[in-house]
Image (tube, rainbow, N blue to C red; front, side):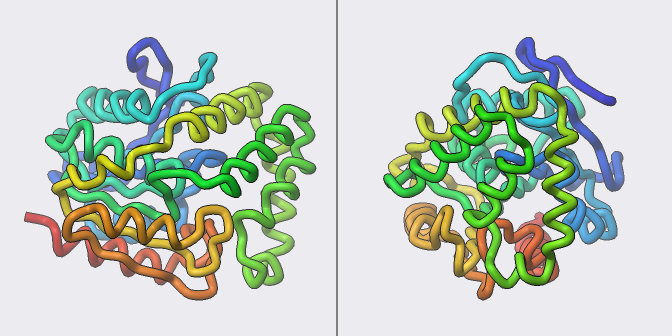
Length: 271
């Protein structure tokens, strides 16, 4: 299991695609996720000869889970240090939800390492409803009942049509959470606290100068499209795409549409 010690924390990572390619993609996970969450996005970028870096943030499944809360600047700094340790000088960032928020932070704090950012179902600020969703997740995580946690979370992130068509798959994922490492829920609590306390970057978005793609599921109830509009309105020259009949987990719910959008955006911004 490859890990790098970055600023005193062991981060799990994986390299896919062409390890010698000049163009690199860095995928940045959603909060409950791990590197395996990008399984539906990997093939299209592998087929186009990119070097691909995936990793779990501290607090996530396969990385260390030190006591938090953390900050998005810490995640940003650690991702940059991981890139440097692996010889990646600059990359296209693709982040979903929590990972999209890290991508924005990186584009603000470390623009010299960022070619483009693709932000999927993310926010740059919070409202009270979103805070209550996350507090509910925290309470469920503290109870440490894996299946109860999963089914309590699922309606907030998946579109009804996806749930109807993929109920057996979701049941399997619920069992997968039950098999997560013993400290999984400890890390989740730290990450939820980080999210609630440190997502406040709307006023800094004007400083992002790299090409930016902002994507949102039309029916995302966790991070509704109003938040993606705020992001797109505040990043100069960004592109904004709404995907119909889609909830929060666009990477699973509409992978073919999303992959076309992501690949087209990245390819046209290769110089």
